[in-house]
Amino acid sequence: MPDPLTFGELLERHEKEIFAYALRLVGDRDDADDVYQETFLAAFRAWPPPRRGQERAWLYRIATNKVIDRARRAKRLVRLKDLRLAAPDRDGVALADLAAAIKVLPAGQRAAFVLRKVEGLAYADVARALDCSEDAARQRVAEATKKVREAMR
Amino acid sequence: MNDYLLEAREHLLARARREGLESVGYRVVDSPLGPLWIAVGPKGVLAIHYGATPPSAELARIVRAYGPGVLPDARRADGVARELDQYFAGKRRSFDLPVDLSPLTDFQRRLLGATARVGFGEVTTYGEVAASAGSAKAARAAGQALGSNPIPIVVPCHRVLASDGTLGGYSGGLDAKRRLLAHERGQVPAGGWPSKRAT
Image 1 (cartoon, chains in turn cyan, yellow):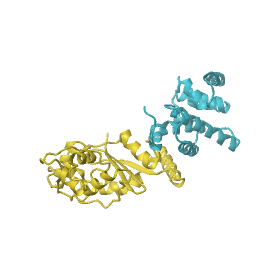
Image 2 (tube, rainbow over the protein chains, first blue to last red):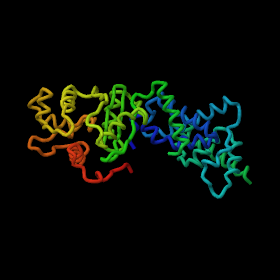
Image 3 (spheres, rainbow over the protein chains, first blue to last red):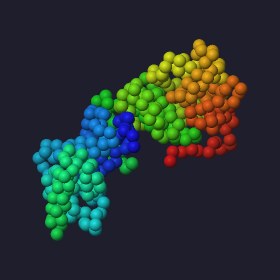
Image 4 (cartoon, chains in turn purple, green):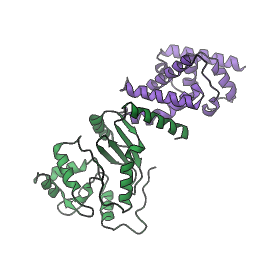
């Protein structure tokens, strides 16, 4: 797909997944609305997207940072009580249990886990979204997966 | 698109407008000729494109003139959508919309200005509009320039024919040109044209 020429093209291509991602991370529609708005406004202000063909990972990175900033500002754990609305049922795992398990992960591992296991991004894209190396992304997902498994035993 | 996302998009657009990040608003409307992509800039209608998605060259032209702040903004294109509806319903014979021809060359502007003076239901030739635009020998160039008319229907290049009376060309396809001319001459089939809607 060619690079987006306009804000509208970027928005129409990615707004659904960014809204869904924000909802999975913050678990509340009003908060997800804010993260979605802040993500796209930041992207428009920082236009153009940094590297050819990587605008998707760029948006995920902005959205992840917005979520982490909000959590830090609010000095509270990110709520995931509405995860049921957005997350697909994986491997027969009860969504409420999964939500509870994800909730206790540190922010970086939580984002890596959701990007890889819920959004289905490739490790290279998870790494771009989180602005870390691919090895670090794999490690975070592995650690998060281990913790989630333990929490759900 | 679900309601939550629609609502979030409205909030986003309101903030983008407040911050001056939106230079051009666009929307897609249905018409008897299929979907039309309409863009409105600070000086008026910038583009009407046959189809739901404009080609990259068209977007690039708009971005060169007004930057990348081109956003889906139904409200901004409401006036154009309403006048187009009235035109297709047979309730409007001319458009009262400001049109923005500023990103075009001087020759294109003069030519489209001459084309805009051809009234509802009338036809003329490429040679005649070229002459009206002050370039009597430029009939061929006129054909090419009208072929890239960014605001068809409102600037009625469908009323310009080849000198032998054949249809010539049209950016929306010759079938659309034929149907627009028939519409303006009251030759619409009973029950209207079969609808072409966005898929």
